[in-house]
Amino acid sequence: MVYEFKFPDVGEGIQEGILIKWLIKQGDKIKEHQDIAQIETDKAVADIPSPATGKILKLHFKEGDTVKVGNTIITIDDGKKELSTNLKDEKKSVAVVGELEEAKEVSKIKSIQQTVKSGEILATPKVRNLAKKLNIDINKIIGTGQEGRILDEDVLNSVKAQEIKKPEQRPQLIVKKKYDMFGYIEHVPFKGIRKTIANNMLKSLQNTAQVTSMDDIDITNLWNLKEKEKLEFEKKGIKLTLLPYIIKAVAEALKKHPYLNAALYEDDIVLKKYYNISIAIETEEGLLVPVIKGVDQKDLQQIAKELHDLAEKAKNRKLDLMDMKGGTFTITNYGSIGGTYGTPIINPGESAILGLGRAFDRLVLINNKPENRKILPVSLTFDHQVLDGAEAARFLQALKVLLEK
Image 1 (cartoon, helix red, strand yellow):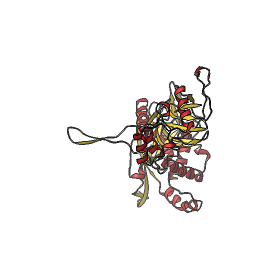
Image 2: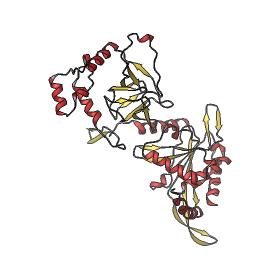
Image 3: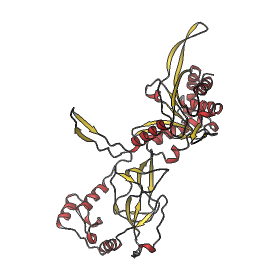
Image 4: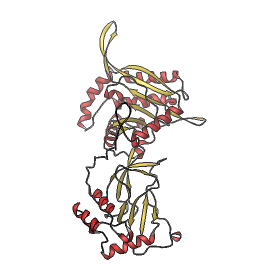
């Protein structure tokens, strides 16, 4: 049987993805459930498994292409001799993450199979010379022309399939270089993570009444505690920063002020009684926001380790969709690159986000004596539909007490 495997919906509301990397090439023999491609969707990279065991007859997209849900990704021959000519009587085969569809031109594909099995190579001298120049074994190419004839494009596709890329290498964006009336410009494709971020942020601003409140927190004692405990954590292979303390304190403050751990759904304000903290992480491809779940049930060591693991997965593009879902409140640490105050945008489905600035030293009078203190600037953006400024201020005060004391 020859099947066409279509790109499935791998997550809620997914419409398209970018083909990051082929894990197989045309002509390969693969097994059912073997990963065949990596496709970037909704801020995560999903491994797409093969729905069947067989031979790859054709790859329908190049690395870097945008693939829409329902597009045929690959054509597979499962090795069975007979093809049904009555498609209406055949049942569709369902894959792990999508579905297989029998090829429409059954008689044509059957002819191709027969040609390949007989060992006869149908190709013009021009095509043979092209394969020879490119050092491609024409006997291993599956032709897509009439009766299995090998075309120029089949040879060129075979060359592309044999190109080996490093695992971390990603296809470069195709930049269109142009000139306008004032000078040289470049057009960068607006897609992938950048487009997803833009859509989410625009949706957030359109559906919430966002207000930002700012404050300073004296974290001198906390800073000293972190420095003291850092060595103990390092002995266990865990890097300790201020962030795990802040995450833990945020969860405790949210328990006292539940409207910041909420979301507005139509005519209801939904107060969430679980505490899943989303952490914004900068990567080369854009901002990713994985979630540490059940923060109130975890200790500092668990939070620090999970934070490190999620950051590594984000930077290596190994986050899956579940790593990104379920957040109830977000923390973004723009201070790590030098910012002080900001107006962060709320993640859709939440009612608040906390921005952390860069900690700095300030001379403070304590009992009429000047002391050098470590100050953490914070910015809290909240949805004024869900809560008022007074409640936001109380949350900040609760957080301040937890971190200062």
